[in-house]
Image (tube, rainbow, N blue to C red):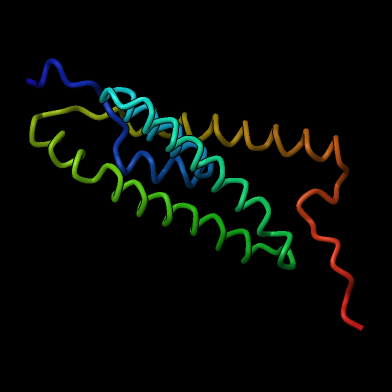
Length: 146
């Protein structure tokens, strides 16, 4: 396969920035697009489902702690670290051979757009849940210690 036949892919850098802006949902979408472009749509579906599960876990976890800015930053950075680790494990070798063959990545700007769109999707879903279940969404109703 020569350079002309190679599809464009999302880079690890773009995935990290998109995750920071739009959660693991953005990275899952980008991983899925990479897999699909390389003829592996089933792996893409697994990546997207995995990212949705990760987002749901990170939505549920803050309810276990007293919400504050430190917790929010830790969860945000944790998502980026987990996504970069997983992406490097899943597609790291593919990225190296892709670069050796002269493949081109989408611009980081396109990755930023994916992150922003994912952020809007997460926010819209959260608003929907709050409207449906009330403002206590994401909180655990654990009785205080006596």
